[in-house]
Image (cartoon, rainbow, N blue to C red; front, side, top):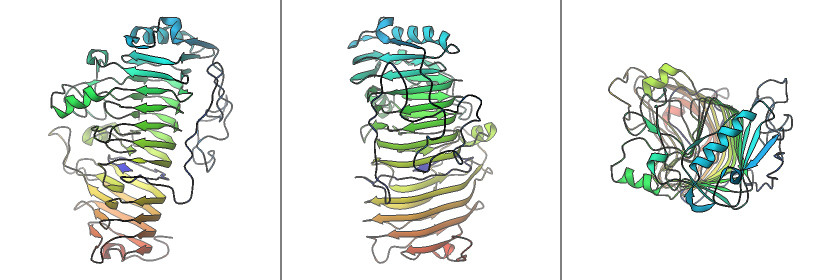
Length: 456
């Protein structure tokens, strides 16, 4: 996992970070669900949203220890169910269905307050540009259904940059909209019988590699300012940029997903919750050219000004592969980020052939513009890392804080790193904390507070 932006708070992470080959949970068995759901009656095999009159999702008190879905009322059956074919869709992999998808969503929006609507995508290959979802809506991909992202950049329109970034993440100015997009929505489900959404991202990766990209690439799925979101039981592949990006959202569940991209594909993160709260990511398999899961909260002074921290996030039973992130567990921040990273729990991880098992590090001097504030120093406190086993490690942990910043209250408990050379030593600077049952012996920075209260 990589936490790379400022303003995080109260993030609970139960995480399994894959190595170059694979990672498995130490105490649980990965179960990627293959749910068989009727396209005519979206009765989920697990309840998700609150029953009428109840409060919002409470991840801490309401959620079952083994799953992010538990004690909520049965998800309502959508009253209006139609097929993409009803709107002129042609699933031959060549005909553009951009107009069909947009026509369908325009029509189904009228049922948002009348029992909701569901759009079924039948078996076939459905080429399309970007389209926007609506509230109280289900996008359902039947078995054998494949949505293909258009390879015409004009069908991914330019939209305003996110206010917490101040500009496109890769280029100045606006950014390409995501293939599937939504803003200000409530009660949205993207699911199916193991259908596929393929962003056909190679043309975008080549623009990046060739340095001919004019605007920041679009995500595969981005939902903004939305709540009560479920994404489940599908395969997402070949995203141009980050794959799933909930931003300024609450009550988001991503469950039973397979996310795939070539290991060389640039910045194809799997799942990136951003300035969002009450997010659960579980039972997913991810192969990507970058982070599997990265928790963000905007960018430098723009993120600080917006003041929307990511909080109450659970990540568990995740496996996969990535070549670029040499650290199994990484928390990354830098001058200019400001904010805080606090109350993070990472536990029960087995990793194999990971270069650096644990890394807390400065960033790469990556700032949106020259108006970033070098005095905006992040605060890190209350990082609890326990029950970690790393096999065939090549380097000891690296804990590189920032001079003048507060990187304290780091706790490492029951951490065993095997395969290191006899002279391998932890690298620590500008950090403090304590350890309990750690091998090999940690740096002195973590031995100055070995009381039971620090790392109990």
